Length: 133
Length: 483
Image (cartoon, rainbow over all chains, first blue to last red; front, side, top):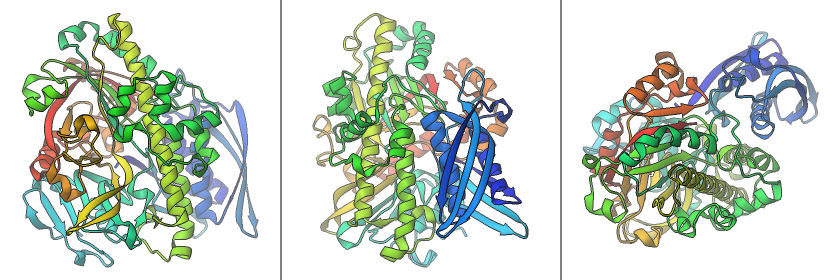
């Protein structure tokens, strides 16, 4: 129970990733509106499939929070299919943690594989994720 | 499905191998009946999943503070026979590798400290950064950080962040040998290199605690270890920060890739991803885990240095003259190679302890020289409202590979705690009860409310009565820096 679980949905993989990214950010910061899009970071992630990509993407957000103190509020994303799987090219916009402005909640340590699930139901992508905090 | 428990004693409950297909050994939960009934269903499911892992011997254990985790339950303990294709599993150690506890004694009494408590707390809050994204005063480049993860607390002491004697009272001397920095990724280094000397967030904390006379349970041993009535001690709880979390993540993903295809191992939960201990992947993870162990030892060593600086400044006296000696430092998320008696044969085992503390009895080679005759000190962090414990390992602990609890264990989810309690109100209520709290996150404070945890006294009594550790002293918080 030292964890937070969330469900995310999206009509496309891009939408799903954005929605999951916001849920992860919201676990760490109480008010997402207070994260201004002051700086940007371009990332590229290659994964075996959609499920692994979701995991890798959330791990990337955790990495950027620790390594660069970056909190993200805007996501511009594009998915490409490749021979080996799937690739995400994204521009993430946000700003560094500022304790005088952002009410921080708890560090997310990792994205757990426990009960981790991504499925396509009719025309919608649906994910269940547990974060270790 | 709730298992049919077989009652072994008043404090040991067994789940047979017929509970689930694939169980190689039974599971055993150490708890009073009342504590057992407070555990969530996931604990039973997870501990029996652990019982299916290749090479496991005797039992899959769960300690009295057990609660739902990933893969292993928190409080989960399992030993695998290395010679019999035993596996190593990052899920049996946890993301926060070497999350652990350190306890510092002082010569100060409650009367000395009470008038200065606010000043102490304010200065500790400044010197020991806490909360999301906190960074420490030690600024390192990547190559130096890579040196730290090989040398642990020794590196700190060589830099002047601590005393040589600190190493003698830290588990493993504060340094895991054979930690090869080449087995950790650049990403792990990037995540962790600015975080030495920081508490982190969640249930991590630094506390000033009071030794009340009536709470000293083993007067003789307490006296020998430098504990006396009305004394003030300092305890803190933290781990390997982003570095350890990334090491665990990197290797979980690697194991998921090779486990079935290369080693034909099938598991019931992806968080139980594992590899044979004696495989290249298993050995690399073991080395990387040791690097994270060392990062965490260095983290707590640096925090100790800051604590000494603060006390020295506030009391205008050298830390040495104030008697700020470390009692012990011990991990509760780790795996280690140990020799144990398995049904009359000494075997080399890889023992996983996740949210469980080693509690070696007198005479075991793991016990540091200073405590050789007494048994190893065990530090148990309770919730910030109810108190913590110092215990000692016992000979009868052999039944759980010399392992006991690590805390009180949650009974309420973070979301539920936040719904029920308000951080600002809790802070005021606690101040009225004589516990000052300082935090960057009042919402985070609500999640750590005492009522979100099991009763620590019952948890410790279960461990004591079962013979896996003995009580020495209970410690009551008077000030808390909450992560």
